[in-house]
Image (cartoon, rainbow, N blue to C red; front, side, top):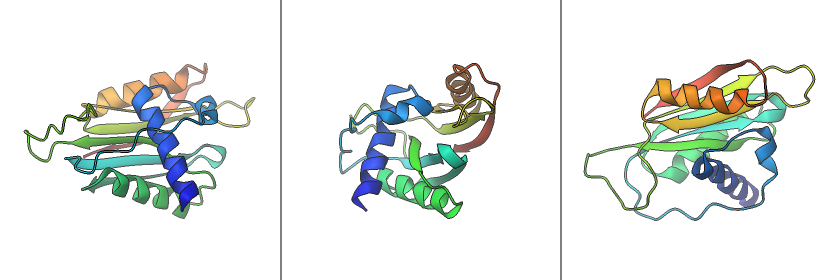
Length: 157
């Protein structure tokens, strides 16, 4: 369970930086622990790059719950190296600002490319206020590799 938490924390780092891709998986930095009273409706996307498996979840009351369930769904889909690549939230109430600086992005997307010359397919994930914007950001991150990418999954809270 400690390994899963460490992997989830590393996945959170990608959300904070907004820079995602298969090469970014080598970082060892950990994201700061979330405050206990984060408000909102949470969602997460988990991805296993070596086997292109993914899982997602939306509608959680807590960030960690969304992350844990997305990881579980990815592993259930036979993902061998699942990590959380995007976590985001929607307002439960419009006065939900918890002063954490974590944005209220309602949608997230995962894009995966095909490149026969690479061992791991290029990918990108991101979140934004709208589905279209999240998809565009995920595609842009994936296509930095020079590959043609397609949206594999999207979710909005």
